[in-house]
Length: 297
Image (cartoon, rainbow, N blue to C red; front, side, top):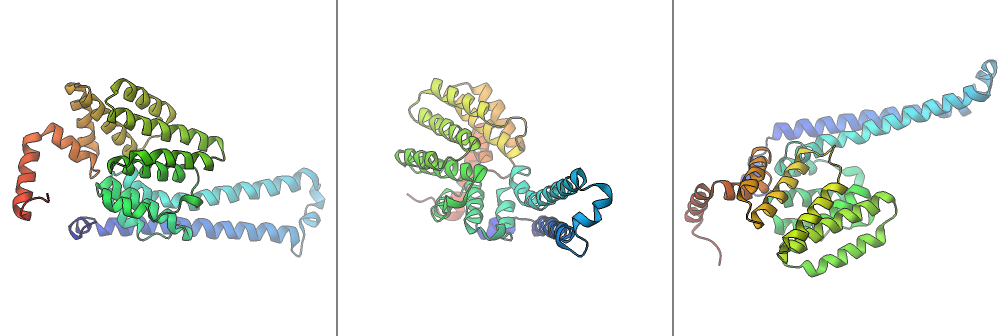
């Protein structure tokens, strides 16, 4: 982010989200530790479980108590992990990559520096700062990533390669992802990655019929029911550019209108404005060039 962009972030909102994230994480993990201590005390303490359960029968009662403790542990772990939703929500629900990036700088991600770098790169990409995102992602090791984080890494890096004219290297990324598959979810995510990459290849080759087919495949594979606003805006933008490629102006306008209305500070909104308000956009760009002394060759 530039200094101007950083100044546009509401610091009070950053503090609020970071504080709520940390409170939920601390309470969740503290309660988690207490439940483990209590379970160990019952089993190995002064009054072992076998002794105080003797009056009730050791069989099902003992098993039930252990099951209840593990169920509580699972719930508390979930509470602790969902604290991070306050951070991700800045991008996924508010569509504000600048707020998201600022929040990410304040979070440790349980010591996983690579996960922090990945989220910074995602924020920079959706701001439209593609070179900065490329610099960040190139210093990120995906070895510790699983499931969604792994998919996000390879999708982001593939998108950046396509943008910088390095599409020939995307196949290497797909092969690398293939070698890391360890579950059914990974296999499905591999299909999503290939569908999105093939869509971009088809657009580059002006094979719009295939592009639409890969777009529909991407939608079919994705979780349409639980999609966040960020995801919906991204899909609408992809639909809009495909409609524009095919010369369907009315359909492109409808999709870009959705992007402009809900995209907030995502870079997609600039593309929508260029299509929906070309004269206003051109005037704004000219004024910017005058103030900066022109554009680079």
